[in-house]
Each structure stands twice: as structure tokens, then as C-alpha cells.
Image (tube, rainbow, N blue to C red):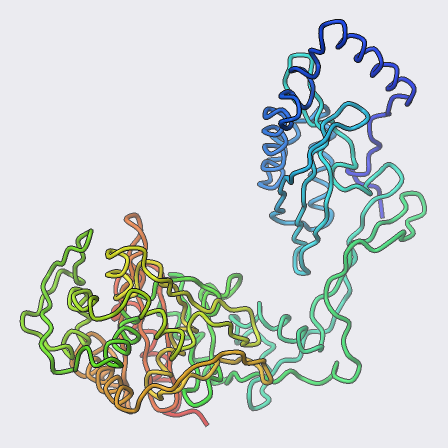
Length: 545
């Protein structure tokens, strides 16, 4: 492998006796001027209180520029800008490093050569493999004008990078992972683009392959490996290497989900469909299909789809009944002004009407019926939200913190404030609401289950099923009314910021399946997520096998 620029020899070091001689002269001068070095001209300009703030500021600025890819700026903070830029560029590009995270640590100290050594931690993501983490030290030297610069040398990039040794990235060729759906149908082809980012993870975790590689320290002259600095991926288990990894996914549902997201009109969107009776995920899709798995790892305000949980909390303690009158005014002020979508109002509405028309002000008006932490407790106890899930892929499992004030409590009643969820969570919430029992979602079999939940009372389940069904027949989810089967649903609109349109949500259930969809900046749930759910449920059987 030809030598690259980051292997350039460092600036020759001065003889050690010369360093001592200079240091000795420095001591004499300091004594002659009454200890001025300790008083303000060395790395510890404030005596024993800590390193010069200007030096630390320069160190952090160098690390920030390097991490952000501003290499000319980072190099300009060193004593040898030309070499520094060349080395930093070659190091990151040659090892396929993207978006490094570099963090200065405590423990800066004066080194023997007169520099201030600032320790830092480097977390280097190697594309497609994993993160290489190591520690190094940044040397800073005070300049004649009193400013500070990074004293350039190869070893600051990594302690073992030198004029005799360099790094090399080795990638091991691996066969494509063998992953199938629940019936043994292969999922490894272009028909399921949303699964591509997950297949390697699924196969690797199951011992069936996945990307592998290593960062090797090699001798510059011979090219021989001196040591392995970092290894990525697992060696396949010979006993299982050729055995396909079977998932809970259903090829028919997955294909229909991928197609349904075409209704998102180019907006970021995601979808999850799972079985009500056991939590097994039938389809998981994202648009765009590459990159971040919004469906399972996203963090969104669930908006009015969260009213399923809020209604459960109210019904559990008998605080309201479907036929109770709960007025729905246009506006309600609780620290700030809350309103309904399109500032609608329903004077003298029943709670059933408030649910089916998704009346924010009515739900907020009932906040006094619940204790401050009660909504979060119900979410955790009955729906598993906020507990640790083991699904078979990385997930975000939700958060419902106790409100800090009355305004935040009002917001949490309608799935805003600090309430956080994603389509996987909301599909599970829907399944729990209409069955009465939480089942930890799963994409693969045999996952650990540490959740502890209680079943919802049958009377509450009956009421929730009636409310979601009425939302389709007489409410905001009428877009699903022409579908075969007894479909229940809840729409949601979630505010993001003053500069962005609202996210659109819709959750639904039919037979043994629950579905959740979010469309970023979709404006309304019925208008943006509704057509996606309609497309999916139109293309699949009324009940999975």
C-alpha cells in the first residue's frame, strides 16, 4: 500500500540536553524577574488554579474544527498548518472515518518539552463497521506574542502514529446476510429497501455474519502488522453461519408498507404494523429508506394519538365516561393559549365526541382529574412505555416525564410537551388498548423481556375499542371508513416548532393488527398519514396468518 500524506515524518525534535539547557535558562530568567513565569507567562498562568484559559480555549477550538471537518481551520491553529491539514485529511479519509467526536478531558499538565498537554478522547466512527475509541494528548505551545498554538506532531492524532508506524483499515469480505420473513421468504433483495440498513445488524447479532474489519497498526517499511488497534464485527459461528435468520416480518405486509409510504409525497415518514396478540412486527418501513430508522428509534411528540393513553388514565379511575358532557371550546389558556385544529369547537360535546373529533381543549380541561405523575405511571404500568424493550433491533422506548408545571401538564394530556414516542411505540399502544394486554414488540424471536405491566380492565378495553371505531365512522379518521373489516383509529397532529408544519399521525387497528404512521410536516393526521394507512390496509388480508 503506497504511503499516504498522514505518514509524513514529524518535525525533528531538539536534542534532550538542549531542552534541559533552555529550561535551565528559563528558570534563571524567572528568578531574575521575581518568578514572573509562575505568575503569568506559563501554561498555568494562574498559579495552581489551572491551565491558562486561552490555551484550553485553543485546544477545544482545534478539536471542534477537526470533528466538524473544518480541517483548514483546525490546521491553522497549529504550528505547521500545511502538514497538519494534509495529515488530518488523510487520516480520516484513509480510514473511512466520518463525523468524529473529540472531547477534551480534565488533567492538562505541563510536559517536559514545555508544552501544555491536554488529554482528549477520540470516538472515530468507521463507515459501515463501528466506532474506534481511543485517548490521546494535545500539546499546546505558547507563542512569542502570548497566543497559543497546537504544537504539531503526528502522535497527537493518535499516540502510535509515527514516522515508523501507520494505520491501515482492513475490511473482511462477507457473504450477504441470510434473513427471511416469518414464512422463510428471503428479505435480501431490492424489494424491501427499508430493511437494508437492518439486515446486517440482524444477521450479525444472530451470529450469521455482518460486516467485519479492523484498524491495524503496521510497519511503514515492511507493511507487516504490528498490532490490531480495533476490531469490528463478530466471527460467524460455524454451527449457525449458514442458517438463515428468521424474523417476525411478513413479506406481503413489508412490501405493501414500502409501497404505501409512496403516499407521503416525498416527506420523511415511517410506519410500523404489528400483531395485537403477541407484539410481533409484521412490517417496518421508512421514507427515505436509507439511514435513520425513524420507525423504531425516532423521538416524536405523538400528538393526539396519545389521547388513547390519556383516555385510558381517565377511564381507569372513573374520572369520565363516554357519554359525559365535556365542553370543547375553541381556546383554553393554561399558561399559554391552546386551541383545536383549525380552531374548531363543539359546545356541549360528550367525551365520545371530544375523542372522535380530537378536541384538545376538552382533554386539557380534564387535567385536574389526574395527578401530576399519573399519566406517566399509566403509560408505564399498562402500556410498557418508558420501560426497556428488547425488540431485536435498536429502539427508543418512549418517555413520559412528570410535568414541571401546569402548562406542561396541559400539553402532556394531548401528547405534546416532553412526551416522546415513535411509530413502534404507538402501534404497541394501540394493540394494548384494544386487547388489554401489553406484549413487548419483537422483530426476532427469543428476545429478553424485562417489562412488567398490568392488564387493562375489560370495561376500559371495551370503551377504547368503541371510541376508536367511532373515530372512523363519525370522526377525524373517516378516510378509513370504506375499508373492509371493523377498523378503529385515532388521528394526531403534533406541533414541532414555529418554523415547521405540524407532524401528521394516524394509528389504527383491524383484526389482529395494529398500525402506526407518522409523516413529518404532514400538517394533519387524516390528510397525510391517513392515505398511507389506507393504502396498506387495502393491500393486505384483513388478518395475518
